[in-house]
Image (cartoon, rainbow, N blue to C red; front, side):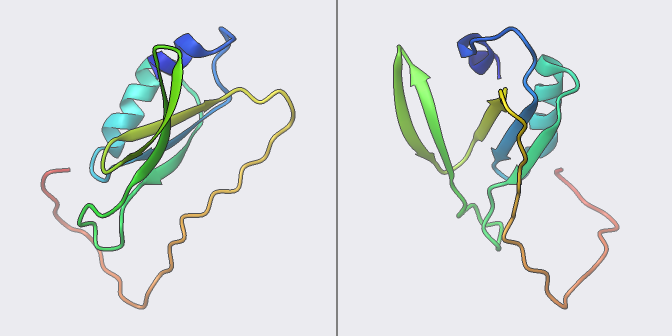
Length: 111
């Protein structure tokens, strides 16, 4: 987030942060964004395969030493900060399809 803010051509807070991250670190990512940006809307979720066996991936563009480079990551965090200059709308689809199976988590560990 700090790197993106340094590259931005404005000192204004972004209108929204689009986030995709590896499963299990979502709360830490949200806390980090809030620490740096304050109250900014966050849209996104986990990059996980249906089995949560770390087969998901993230696509990113990273800038280092004035060079922009595309990357495909097996794990990590991709944050896109947006400062739209026109009225914008966002459609977010997770491609999630519910099933007849369901349940209630009554106890969790490691999250």
